[in-house]
Amino acid sequence: MWVGLVMTGVFILIALLAPLLQGMGLISSPTALLDYPIHQPPSAEHWFGTTRLGYDVFSRTLYGSQAAIRVVVLATLMSILTGVPLGLASGYLGGKLDRLLLFVMDVIYTLPGLLLSITLAFVVGRGLLNAALALSIAYVPQYYRVVRNHTVSIKTELYIEAAQAMGASTWRILSKYLFFNAIQTVPVLFALNAADAIAILGGLGFLGLGLPEATPEWGNDLRQALEALPTGIWWTALFPGLAMTLMVIGLSLLGEGLNEFVNPKLRQNR
Image 1 (tube, one colour):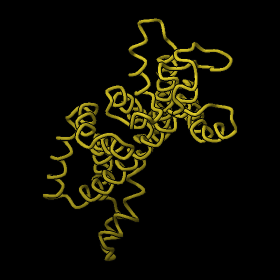
Image 2 (cartoon, one colour; image 1 turned 180 degrees about the horizontal axis):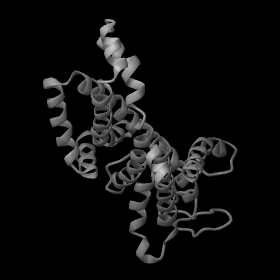
Image 3 (tube, one colour; image 1 turned 180 degrees about the vertical axis):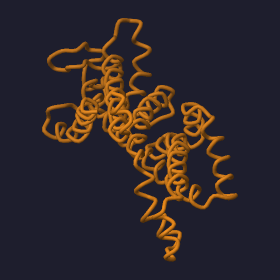
C-alpha cells in the first residue's frame, strides 16, 4: 500500500507542478508545434526527445499525468455519486425497485468495460467530460453491487430496527446509519477502478476517441508514435507508455493494499 501511495503521490505531484515548471521556464510548452527539431533523440536540451510534430516528449509526458488524473477522478466520482445512492436505496427498500436495478446493473456489468467505453466515446465524441462519462458508466455497477450487498446485510442489525421503532425516516436511516457502514470498501474500489480507468483512457486515446488532439495524453501520444516506431524512433513511445504503466501499477498496489487494510481476514491470513 505504501509503495502504491508513493508512486501515485509522485504522479499527483507532477500533475500539480507541471504548469509551475512551465511558467518558470524549466520545461517547454506541451502544445508548441515545430519549435524544436523533429524526431530529435533524447539529449541535454530535450531529455525525452521530440516527436514528428516537434512536441517536446518530456513536457507532454508530464502534462499527460495531469490529463489522466482529471479524467479518472471525474469518472470515478461520477460512478460513486451514481452507484452508491442507488445501492443504498435498492438494498434498503428492496421489492420491485431492487429487482429492476439488479437487472439493469447486471446487463451493464456483463459488457466489457473497454468495449462499453469505446461505444459511448464514439457516440458522445471527444472531450474531458465526455471521456469521463464514457469511463464512469462501466464502474457504476461495481459500486452499486458492493453497497447494495452491504446494505442488505446491515439493515437487519438491531440499531437499524431501533431507529425504525423510534420513527426515523427512510432518508435519516440511509444517511446516518447505513451510509458510513456500507461504503467501507468504496476507497478500495476507487483505487482499483482508477488504475483500470488509466488503461482504458489510454486505449481510447490510442483509438482517437479520448481527449482532443492538442491535449497532452499518453494514449494519443502512443498512437502518433506508432508510425515512427519501425524506423527506430523509440523515445516517442517509450516514455508515455512507461508513465502510463507506472501509474497503473501504483494505483493497483494502492488498491490491493487498501483492500488488505480494511479486511482483517486478509491481514490474519498474511
